[in-house]
Length: 545
Image (cartoon, rainbow, N blue to C red; front, side, top):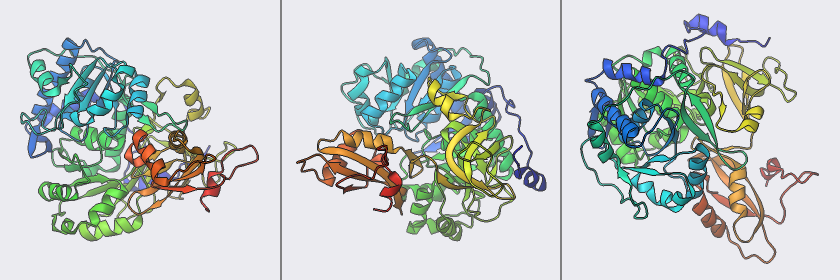
């Protein structure tokens, strides 16, 4: 039996060894309780508007009723949501879940190619979409099964009409969310009995074969992960007292589970930031909110610490600064602590694990350079290339089992067979070591994945797109360190004979097909790519060029 040194550390620090993954029969039950308990408290704020828990209850019930009566949505239907951090996001999400449907989270910056694949793979017939993203949908609508388009503006759900980009003229018959909420207010929602093993989200994660796969997460996965997170950080989850600023996108599993579901369940006052790139507005939100909790990725923290006005923010209430999505850099944590008094408490997880697998517990008082202890009820094994447990202190592939780990990918039996060990541990593809006290440290990634601002970028996808550019014979890409985004994509290209291709041509081609964070930052032309004897491109050799 492999060792579990974190159990002794749990005992020393009063952390339970397990949690009750069935503390609530579903996420809906968990959030229903919060809406009753904290009815008169502020739930969400954005663009100067505020909704209480009772408002969210009423609006999401209206949306659920509308979906049931007008669209005939039934348990298990998949509904896509392609929306930034607007108040409409949690309303739509709760409405979808209360109707018994499964939410498919979509990045609003996706290109037509990426969106078409995801909608078709998930089998969506309905999409809730920010009006500013409608041109992307219009490009591919006819190639998808989408029958109903519900458009979102920044003020939807608040009763205030805020300016929003026009809906693409090609989308005739689109319905505004504000109108759906009005209609739904006069309809009666039929409660849908939900169980822990019912699916709640399809969370798409970069495809190693160039197409993303949907991690099929259950209600029990998310209930378990909220309980696990609460067990690690009880002092940062005080009912009715927390104020959280949410700048990481809610369609990303980290913000969805921690910022939305977990903090909503304890009655937090949640300030949504739709565009964190507007640093002036972002810092002003901090100034007004005086948060007790902030979750971010390293790039977000790095950008904030460079902003001259951050020092004017009152951080006296801040008790938790959490970091995930990508490695937190010690120097960034130091800068953040110098300004706010709090270091960045790092965690680790994946879309497939709902997401939190490990987190630095409350007992840690300074930046540790590790991703913390496995959360209660989680077993981590480090496996060597032969599939055996790595010796203590040695590195191995991080493999995880726990109530937060997905049952599998949506409609991907082959991928599922490869993703789990014969005894049911999920293979993360990351390489780690475990300290004698049980802390997990990530040392490498087994996959050639690149992490740009906390988002997974898979080289195969970039290479497939770039190879389609006229004049490209073949190409390969790697991740290289980048001060702003952690890593950036560097593409190596071999030109076709006689081609007069420039780096700008390749980048422009990629821009049409890929979300901005996936676009190569630099393009280098080579006469030939380094290859093994069997013709496999040796990406590791590109690192020395």
